[in-house]
Image (cartoon, rainbow, N blue to C red; front, side):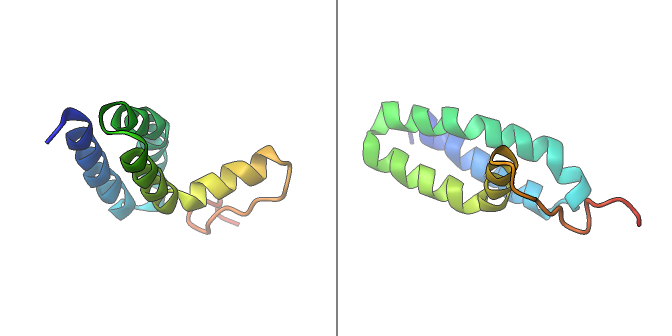
Length: 90
């Protein structure tokens, strides 16, 4: 297996472990994985072409759809709602 696909598999395993963590502890590793994803997908594209990179992009969008929707709404100035686990004690 190529280096890019090996790194993608490791990334997917790490993302699965982060998803199992309590919500309050997901932020730092989740943001790190979110930031590394475009680099990893680009690396797959360089080594294997457009189709595998496109499939990787679709997988990434599926796994990180909620954070991406949150950041999109925040950037557009729309109201955002945090999950109950992240809201302060009221």
